[in-house]
Image (cartoon, rainbow, N blue to C red; front, side, top):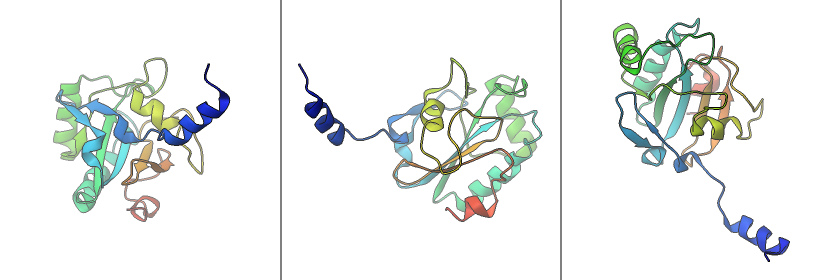
Length: 170
């Protein structure tokens, strides 16, 4: 029988999970491990092609171009809000390239809430954040991760990727 003291000792020596414990599929079907990005910051954004915030793709691309040596930008298309991402992975990829010149990493289309939530978003929404935790409210929420795989801050949709609150963290 495991005692409470033993459980407490095991918890002390069991590292809390980081983003490096997860992987995802890119929009073109390749497996990517977050551990590949150790030593860089990561900005994860749930995206949609038919949203009032879709124009943020342009600024995400600019952020990638300006800070790509120290920051990995990853877009995760999701159709969870107002059916604003109805396309297939191929259609989403073409839209992003043709309209915004996106060449930062795009993941395959996932769910960012509900019963089928992707494990990375289940992890992210439960991370401590100074302003809020819990369910994603809309498209283009942003999660900024530090070089050690821990959440620095989470930003709601209206915060532009080039806003000083994000740039200042890089």
